Length: 230
Image 1: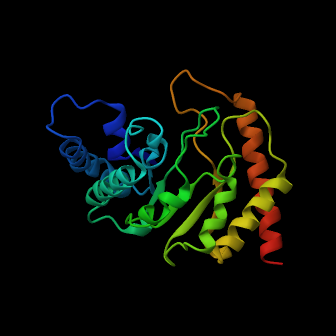
Image 2: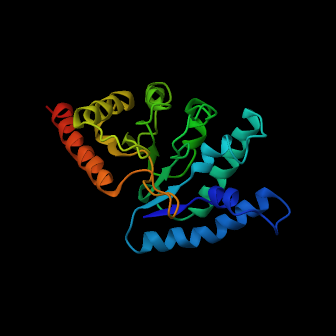
């Protein structure tokens, strides 16, 4: 079950009451921690959706230098970790993305500039979008900046902003590439880059196409499994 990160709440629901962004951020973390624990206690895996860790570089924090944004990401990770206090890491995944909008994304921050910071999150899985044409190549960073051995990778293998249905062979190729970059086929889960319906009433992909894309994801994962365990 997904839940918003303190940072994305802080950047989409404007602060009108706290003295600083940091004060607001950690107040949100204290309250969202209750929601996180409720999700875990209900028996679900928790996925924290945190586009603030990448997308907001070109949006809310576009006035910052890269170094300043990296400090902000570190602060937002600290807020997530505070909210997760007492929750086992293996029950939590962290989704980071550059926004699932249909646009050029030329102002996106590079994954190389934030990946080591993301790895400071006390989570058991990292969900990253590697199907889109702007960031697909960054899967190779996992060869030089490996995930901790206890962390799984949910790798985006179909993207969520177009009505193209990926061929299962393409999905399989992306999964195998992720497994090779990570160096461990046991810690790769095939996923979607992002959500298909981020905003109410705003849909880029037709409902029946969504289901077709998910079928391609399943079929491609089956092909990749055969290749990786042949």
